[in-house]
Image 1 (cartoon, rainbow, N blue to C red):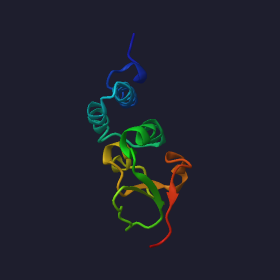
Image 2: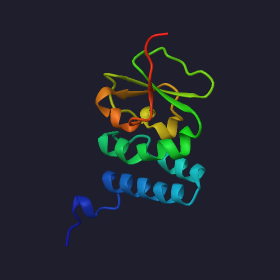
Image 3: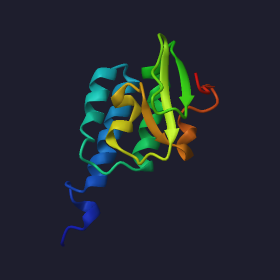
Image 4: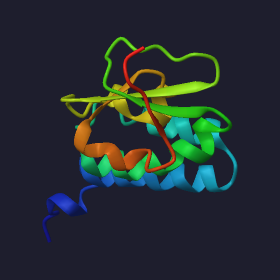
Length: 127
């Protein structure tokens, strides 16, 4: 029987799902360094809502810690001590915008992805 696209071990979606699943397992075992390294292997994959929705849940427990998450619409906004900045606007999904990988200072996101940080965030105006 011939292999279908979904049966292939080289199917990009299958590889993506395995990387994210293994990273989730590593985060659950309190191994964030290994988990982050697994997620770094997503470089070169098409970044879409599936990847962002699958990796964003790791943001708060493993990246934010005691820092304050600031939502901003200012592309030049820089974090102060104890802040993580998420800049919203008309930005495409990109590898560099996976918050767990980039450690999130100045991560850019499409405005409709506001769900990522939820209601536990401060909205910043202009300084």
